[in-house]
Image 1 (cartoon, rainbow, N blue to C red):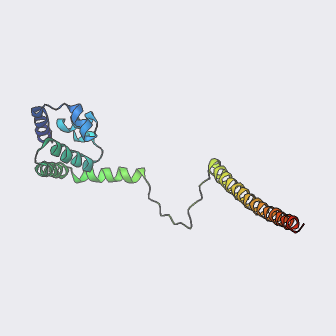
Image 2: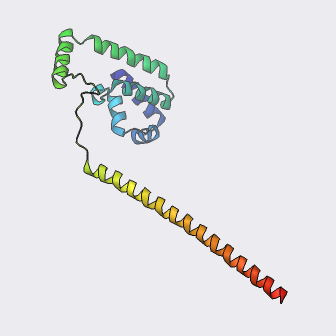
Image 3: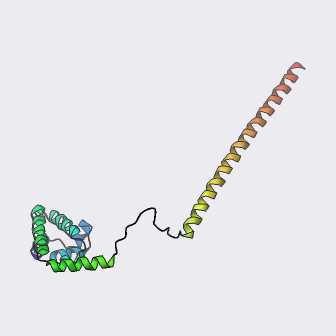
Length: 167
């Protein structure tokens, strides 16, 4: 991993790019690039992200990113093949102790307590929707009444107009 980091550092420095500038361009933290250049694999929780960071950093610097990824894959293989079976078994035991496995069925799952704020929000939203519906209904009904009144007024005007014409 150190060799990969050294290649990346040399390429960056030969181009005159600062670590901050590269980090900004790659949307990474400067500390992440420093850890890559220092060969500090332990600074990354997920080795797959590290692989993609190396690939993107290599592309950015104009290096043969496929070769760099291949070098990284070889490093990972060498690193993981050095872990003893006993260490793997111990890690599995620790992991099993931390999280007991439960078989869960949707029919036997206990109901969680509901947050009263969520319930209040739902009830409030329903009340608001009902109020808006009532308002719209009243508005439509009043428009129908206005239309009928206008028709009555217009018919009265016609009658008075006819009466005036006949006189």
